[in-house]
Length: 428
Image (cartoon, rainbow, N blue to C red; front, side):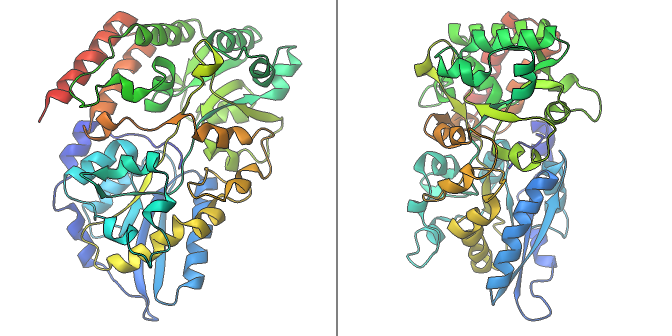
């Protein structure tokens, strides 16, 4: 699933209440032909929603007892739509939860515990089918409240034709030479800028910022989640590198783009040379006027430091759904081997979490799609400390944004990051 726009933490918490999920009870629960009706909500681009719909259609065709009704939410207001629906008589039975809001949903007692379903020997989707490194993000006190629909290790997309037309070395050539580090990416972005193009488009959320300031975001917090380490030298250097490139226009902050513009539209139009994203753009990049490719995110200094951020949204079940068994029948199909293959075959939008499906990532473009698979083993996921402290991620992103738009310098930003993190961790 593509990264979706975050709600301000205060607004989100203020809108939610323990009674949100009671709305499910006022809806029809059966179809005219006697099947149990399951309502499913998901957000994404047009290309992504088309892929999701394929899996829903396939499930409906093979199920004799359950019919799924999908509500697709295009654009950036998915979280708002979820909250609105949960406060009305249109609450979904299951839906994709965004990482930064999953903790609030769970801590408020709104999600159904899925442990029993996953441990059922008759289930088509079991705990052992899911990578532990991902599943742990959706567990609290050994109980499981979300199932990953897939994963999305991030890579650098680049306009190969544009870079070669300027006589520059491509990221792949630099990577092959063992020179694809932060300095090389900066030099390439500067050359693109000097030629009248957009160098690198930076989107401000947890995955890009932590890729820049740390080799392991969980190391930004102590293991017991009582102390933050945003005051380290590594964070200073990462923030400085980002800020210097934004100020020099080698990097363009997506938050300052004009209405209608975004990182992907700049790339599709041929204006931008580089952007950082998961496989979610592959489904939308099927008819470009130029050749594009992907390469791992640049390493800080040396090749052994190569890393990747890996968003992975969970599918969750409304705790008060009237038909949890029927909902699980759909989820185990949709998040299991058959559903993942249907959703991601061809020019899919993500990377499977089920073993044996690697071949579907290598179908079609880009040429070096193998990097999506390679990145899984070097990826970091959403920080545990932030998953268990709802609202913290938004606060930290806001501090970085102030730096990006010139409202505060690196030193102030770093000080504010450390203060905000420590304050959140100190809350009971």
